[in-house]
Length: 153
Image (tube, rainbow, N blue to C red; front, side, top):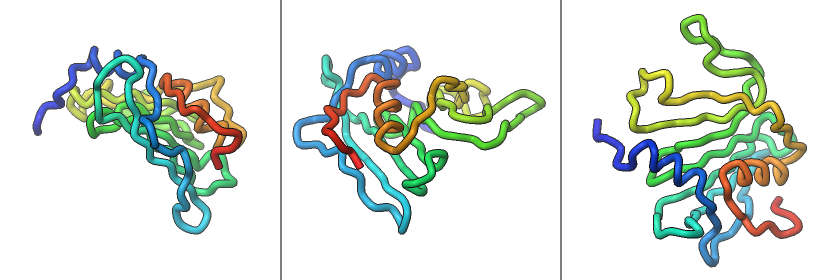
C-alpha cells in the first residue's frame, strides 16, 4: 500500500481552513436514479494554493432525509463524511457507529485495522429538514462557503 502523502496534522488543518467554490463551479444537483440527487463540486482553500478538494452530497431519495450523505475529499480519498445510521453498530463490544447522524473522521495515514482510521462521531445537534439544509449544515461543519443562492435543489 502506497502511503498517503499528506500528514495527519495537515489534513486536520485543511479541514478546518475556510474553503469556497472556484470561479465557475456550480452547486446544482443532478438526478441520480429515479428518486435521488447528487452534487459533486471542486473546492479551493480561501487562503492557500492546495488543490484536490472535493465536496459531494448524495440523496438516495430526495424526500427521505435519512438517505442523505456528504463527504469531503482531500487529494483523492474521503477524509470526512456525514451520514445517518438507523441502528447502533458494535465492533468488538464497543460502539463503532452510533445510532443517528454521525460524522466519519477518516485518517488515510492509518491502517484500516486501526480504530482511529475511520471514527464515527455522534452529531447530536445535526437535524436537517431537507436536502438544502443538509448541504448547508455539512458545508458549515467543514468551513465551506458555497455562496448559496435562494434554492439549491
